Structure formats: structure tokens, C-alpha cells
Image (cartoon, rainbow, N blue to C red; front, side, top):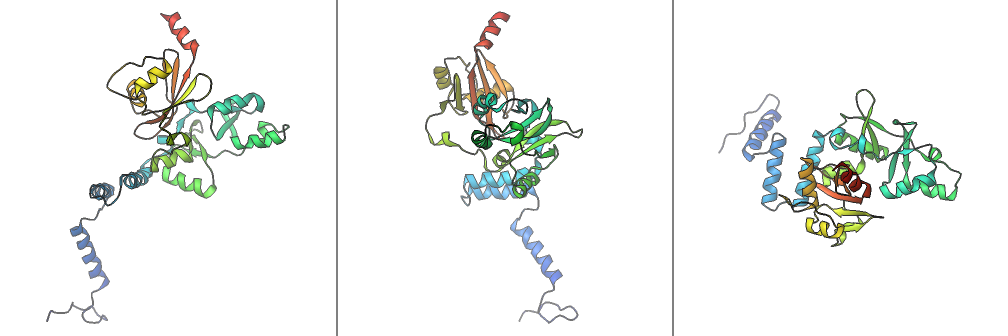
Length: 294
């Protein structure tokens, strides 16, 4: 008969102490190869995916959820130069074309200078203005939330959820505005691109107003050249997103712009790995300007 475990004072014979159990658990953990740090977790996730224990979507989301704790607002924000702002002193009817063209659900509002943000305008409040034309933009703005560049993305997500807020203005250590972050920006770091109504179609280039197109970044260059009547040069890339990455010399970020002939390409959506959606806008004055320079 095997010997019972040695007893500690006041303990029944044959029963392990909590300290001995804890030691055994630690030893078993090492034997099982359980992760002890983040890299170990990634290794386990990779092994689980290779063995088809989790699919690629779950794998990507788990990795994204772990990665956001290392990211800050500065890593994912739309830079200040690319922010679409509204002037509080401008009448709403004159702002309407810009609001429709930019197609945002929320706009930062400034007074006198873009450095003086006084609130956020929600596009849905245009309905209130339609019912009561006397309402001005100033009457409809809501308080803005300001966060530091160093705010961790996982903490920001929790604050978005608890305060039911969808947008935050990013400021530097001196209080200067450096960009903005939306709830969608944060979620896309975890789940990847959030699809919209265009994504269920096999079509990849969509008219988006006069001389403007919305293009899925994976669209082949030949298709873009044919439909937009342009000549994007060939290279070590096959798609419009790949071409933009080549021209920028890095992974495109939302708000990045690049001109070719009389077309201005702007990245509408991007994640940490690639561009997702691009807007192309034909601006004849760009071509005329280049011809004057040559």
C-alpha cells in the first residue's frame, strides 16, 4: 500500500496541503506547456489554429484582443490633418453637401480656428433641423470627449462602452489636438474590417457622387484603369491597395492621400495590415496644374 502524503500539523493524514497542491499545479503547468507570457499565448493560438481547433476568424479576433492592450490612441487615430471639421458659424444648409460627401456619422465642430474644437455634431440631428429650421449648428452640437495620445486602446474601448460614446478627440501633452479615434477604429483592431452595405456585392467599384468612386482596396488595377480611364503604372502589386502602399512606402492609413494625373485617391478605411476602402475623386485642376509645371 502506498504511503499517505505526509501530514502537516492539524491536517488529516493522506491529504495534501494547499502549498503542496500549488507546487504540483505549477509543475503540471510546466509539463503541459501552458503559456507564461504573451508570446506563449500566441504560440498556443497558432497551434490551435493549425489543428483546426479554432478557425481563422476566431484566431484573428483573439490576436487582436491581445494586441489592443499594447496599442495607444496615437497608434490608431485619424491624424489632425485628415480630420473633417465643421465651422459652427456656417449655416447648416451650406454645410449639407460636405456632410453628405464625407458620409461620417459624427463631425468635430470648431469655432474661429480648427484648434478650438467646441463639440461634436451627429449627422442624425439633421432631422431635428429639418423639423425646426431655426436650429443652428451651435444648437445641435454635443460635448466632445478629449483623451491623451497615450490612452491605451483597451481602456478606451471600456470607456466608450461605459459612457456610450463613439468618438474621442486625441490631444498631446500640451493640449494640442493631434487626431481623433472612433469606436469603429477600436473595434476594427480586434475584429478586422467592419463590413458595410457594399461588401455583399461582387462589384468592387461604386459611383459615390459626381466624378467620385468608392473602391474596394483589393480591386485589380486593370479594372481601376479601365473604369476610371487612368494609367496606374504596373509594378510588384496587383491591387489599388497594393499600389498605394508602394507609393506611400508603408502600410496605408485612413486619411492618406495620393494624386495621379487628375485623380486624388484617399484611404477611407484601413487596418493594421492593409488598406480596405479607397475613394477616387477626379479633380481636373490637378491635371492642369501639372501641365503648367511641365
